[in-house]
Length: 326
Image (cartoon, rainbow, N blue to C red; front, side, top):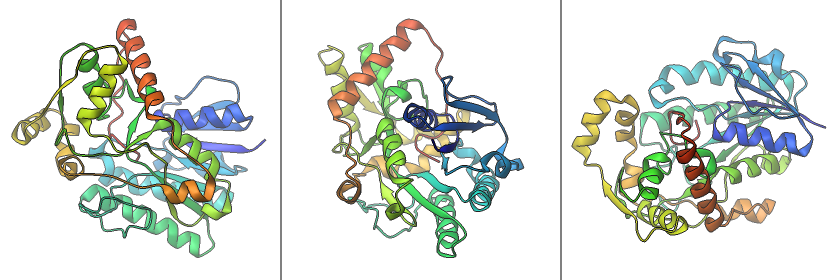
């Protein structure tokens, strides 16, 4: 039985922690509030990682999963102290550090992206992620830590149907299932890679303990690219509805909305991911480790079931900030 520390209890953190616990491992979930899955095998610790103390929590751990997901507006000030503390805890404990990443580090217009695509981020947020990964790689090469990054695209799955910031979350799914028009960000017909939350968690469990994966980044296997319009149509079909209607939020309107909703304002910098094809490949991960993606139809069915359960149950939505991994 391994000891695992998972940082963050959002869709990725909670799902990953639950998978480790189901495997029989002892899991500690660390969040500022002490939240996390309530199930056997999982302990929850309230800790502001940026303020220190993670090294003590992580002592004796074999894997640390960094699934922290800050709201965009907090990245500039919030990520550096968290990153330093997590890297220090990995060094002091000897645990493998698995970082949940994204495709923000790649140049705009580089589709299809692979894990070998050169890092050249076109945005401030991408630059922050690139610096974090560069630090980890340098520490790994120096023999101070063992690390890897698992990169995925925008999240899909039953876990994000209550996440207001998710592009394939309630902002898209709720109107479709209610027969209304969904307002979307970017070109609704641009091809886009979507990564299932379950596939991210499964890839973490497989790669974190395989030394062949250490020291570099890997792409999480994801279903073939679908435009936002196609995602909406798939949700409608799975929900027994005749059609889905989507329309793009005009950029000037998005800017105005961003004045009242900072998260939407931050999305403007990321529009290049939705105004043109944003597609990634994952074949190397599958070839080396045998990890594959969940069938798209299965993911869509889970989305519809979870969304309808939430809508009819009247449960409040949970705002998680960014649409991707930290």
